Image (cartoon, rainbow, N blue to C red; front, top):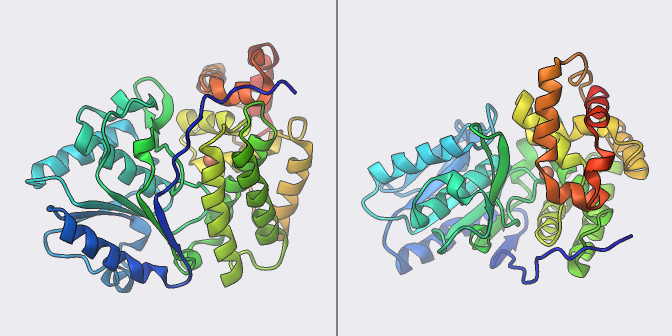
Length: 368
Ligand SMILES: [Fe+2]
């Protein structure tokens, strides 16, 4: 295979992390340090799933001057307009920048916290920073508390946002997007719905098989990817994927998978998945699973293993979403997929357009 230069030479990981059941108890201590060092309150972004989990919220020791914002993660993924709206509201309410931002939830919540942290110090609008290394100065100090494992948002240097005006699903890829601290408490995903836990967890597996099959490679990223796949196999091919031990393994897989993808690129699954998200509004992790319906010719080993995992865990993957769409919808799907040149080059080489003709792309979508 023709190995390509990633362009990623100097990699930044999250500065500090803690892991273990009950690690959430560390968060108020970490924030007490921040409050002592810097002025300003704390802004918490918490997944709406926990809106009624008063016991959990009480454990955060939120102070009266702090802001608590529930992120509507179920309805939609972060959008550039949505992020701009949150930043405008915060600017109206705060007299100075917060001393810390906490993102507690799944990928959408963690990404929202990252984007807001960058915008509060950099100014401008979210879409100004969609791309690579456009963020000029460090964001607000930020801490991730994942409550679902798989997307790796706690570890990556991006925060994915959809821009409705140009159909671009792209994040702020920047060293400044990387979390300063992460608190990995495997007790937190225990209350997640089983299907959501699977869809999200399998994102780590998909990231890493795409990276390892790609043309752009990084020796450390490859090692992270191999261990991520190893952990995902233990979680999804053994008994209950949601046991305490497996929740911890998946949390590690998500973190390592995020580190892996920070040094490389995804492959074919993610551009098609992004097409489903942008055109049909399907959420990222479910969209990945739908794309797997059509991946047998492209990733045969992983295709077989993915379906074995889903069956073993008793998870249903919907079918039929890509059938019988209008020509305009297939055209929009083609465009929203082909815009992802880096991952497509990673998967198929520089001449990916010769392989992924409009007919070929429509055929792939129609199998979902
Ligand atoms: Fe993903």
